[in-house]
Length: 340
Ligand code: ATP
Ligand code: MG
Image 1 (tube, rainbow, N blue to C red):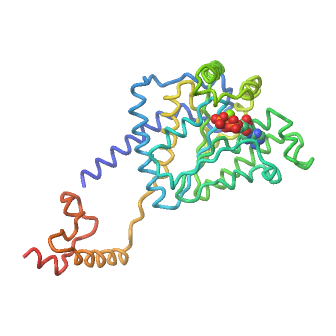
Image 2: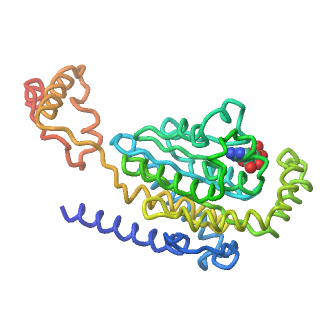
Image 3: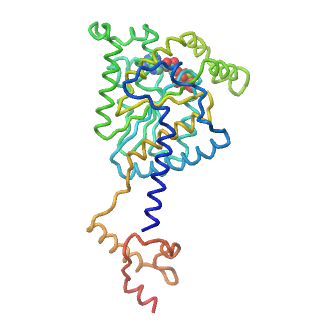
């Protein structure tokens, strides 16, 4: 009993530490964000890289445990939206944070320039098709937020969306923010938690990473001249991000601005945000009712009776003598005879 209370206490303390760690990254709902002034891409909470590896390991372990519970409970789904400018580190973050998870319960979707089929639908259609099922975690590598970012920065992209004139009037961005907030509220109310992470990269660090892609032959494949052209719109993007963060960080689905100039720190933050979300959901392994328990006991007796000559009745229980049996042990006839 005391052991159980200790464990709960330890979990509580850990949950509080994680909540404190990510608190400065959370965009308070209703705030008026000025990205450059409010969030420093180089912030690292006084952590050193060496400490970072250990923290990330802990995060990965916790995620594996909570994902297993989420899947077993089969009540909640989690949607993780990752946004960043080019070279912001989305791919690496997904790779590092999601290791340790059961691939059967995670789906990653990358959203690129929309296809003709996608443009033939309302703008949220392609994202809705990739939502997680209950028990699953879906990661959006870019997300429905592109609809108020790239589409806003490049008006010609909006032209391709075939909207009726009434949907293109002034106020379109405010309307999209509202529609996105409503959609996320609907998902949240129905058991689908929306986690939103923006990897906040500085312009100088982006320049460095682009140059690295040119300088190192094994990184050449990642280099894209289009990314460098997009960099000319840096200020427009900063404004679009600031407005998006101000308008769509809500109580039910807040944004987290993760400092991204140090990849190792960004990964710890992303992992902490996800762990925090899952800890709050606190999914539990389902417990069985009285009738199902009796059924389990009956089956156990049958299996014990099948033990071959010389084998233990219940090899698992024999190998874990100290463990508290999850079900009361009722001895089978064969068992009693064998012990005599
Ligand atoms: P990586 O470069 O690491 O492979 P990425 O996400 O940058 O990943 P790309 O294929 O390089 O993938 O780029 C995807 C492009 O699609 C981006 O330039 C993005 O702005 C664009 N895009 C995403 N969503 C939309 C959208 N709804 N409308 C128009 N363009 C979009
Ligand atoms: Mg790209």
